[in-house]
Image (cartoon, rainbow, N blue to C red; front, side, top):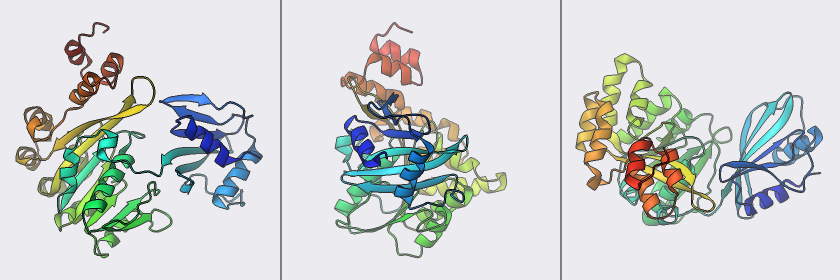
Length: 352
């Protein structure tokens, strides 16, 4: 039988972020964005996978097992976010490795303006980016900063719980979809009756959740939430567009009144080994709020360019800063830049 804990510890030692377990393949890990086969393991069988799943979930009813299941577990200094799924009729597991240590803003190398967002009494802060971009890690740093500084009641609604917080100055209650609440919208609706100061919403997936998040922010709570967008500037548009046309004016007003800022991030390869977050920041100043109210969201990026002293950071500028700090290579800058030709000129790159 495969020892799942041995696999996880060896993967962690190899600096893997993910582990893939499927029939007819040895364990496969993702290191620095690339998939690698783990050495010393044979291909897994159906029985191997079922044994691992039964051990992790206590689920021996193979015939009636849910075909897609999110869950999490932890041991030693590791926490795992897991997804069980089926392919070609066989079970498979995707495991995300999360270290239990919650890193600070300084350790992550992300802009300190995020501390200003956390110091607000109420409003909406959005963390956005593609899947696997470190959004949960950034949110954990934000919650830990608040937990260390303030005596607040913090409620998180997560799918699943990734980082486990210990109460410092704050009281933290973490709720997981499926186990503690049925949906983000249900969790958020009832959180408002639980005397919260701060609410973390793991993902604003639908109209009802977004509407409740805006209401919570509008009624004196600090709301931290995630979205999937391609930039900080497009997050407000993504929120407004979820709603039918006859509601969009009202939603724009609510968003303008509550938005504190948007953080967009991606993980890019560091020089040598490892990945580093590159972070774009939109600070919702009066000019940005006015554009949202007036439905001129497409002009937000121009405000970001002209108001950088207020903490706004454009993604390509963040890439350049990482390059000039000798953290990433020229190739990485150009590969990930939104305007590669402009960025190439600034670093003297002629490879395009």
